[in-house]
Image (cartoon, rainbow, N blue to C red; front, side, top):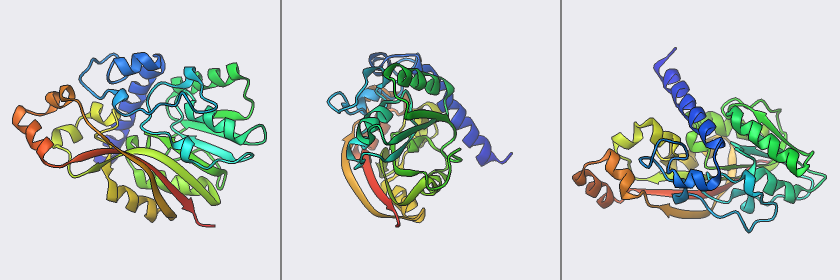
Length: 274
């Protein structure tokens, strides 16, 4: 096994373990415990990232674990009868919002690599009586989904957790129909993160260390074949001092703040050529 493959597998395992723990908790517990599991307040607080879904039609509180960094489904231009795929679907939050848009004649498929999340999402769908919402376990880098399946792909703060983003966007292109599009919320960087943050596995699973430069991110999307890229929303994210203190000395913290490095949540739209 190559070192890159080993590192990729280790990162995926870290993410699986972390999000398995998160699946057992409520939104308030995840936000209150900082990193969304029982590891204490020394990693990322998801409340720093999350946007409020509660006013969106189709919202289901039990499916909202407070893990997103935007409202991609609200910008996705979903139509009645569409087939929508949600990448990293968690407990089903975006899937149930999308289901309101596609109606009875459409279809929504959630993909997640964490078994406890799939189990939780399926239970939520059963409670709601949705027969046209399904959940599939799988890796975004190698999706167990057929070609040209989706009219729309959505994803919320998940692509930054994928080690090989080129593969992930290549797969996204493959499962979209010609003329289809995606709306993806994600975390990107302007500038350079300190090495101590980039190299920490918990910070990776917390959505920061896995984020890449915004220009590089957009370039990967274009290289996958997508066109008409539009940043639909962008907001700056401030890491609390309590997090920075774990990774940086006082001088390093000040250097980081003075460096102009920015962490941003963006919601990106792009189309597969028709």
